Image (tube, rainbow, N blue to C red; front, side, top):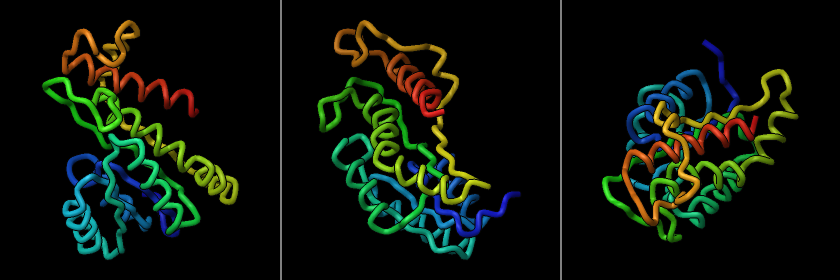
Length: 186
């Protein structure tokens, strides 16, 4: 197990499931963890759980990652508090049974599952790069959580599903975009 003492990590969607387990594990290994989620109550609960289970003090930023402005605000809030970011885990996501739009008018699955990753990463990328340059032996990491649903590909003729929405196609496309984004970052 790698010792992450002194490292700083952000985990989105960390208030349950894979994100919560990831945040707990990073904190248990010594990282200072910042939880990002749309529910402030769930953020507080998860931060308290991390504190209790690991003895590490967790931080949180409440943000709706389906909103471009809120996601930019979350990146700025992190930058205001911390001077380094070693690990960014973009994990927040959901699937929706019916067509919904974000506050920005973007199909909600794409807004949350992909644009949230993109906007948050873009808002923190120079900090991640600076951390990697200052600590070349370890560098820095960006982890974009996806799923096998990416194999369904992208609907380039109707990427926002304005004409033919199906939940699985929207979810699969968002995960395909995650994979493409990850390749581009690499």
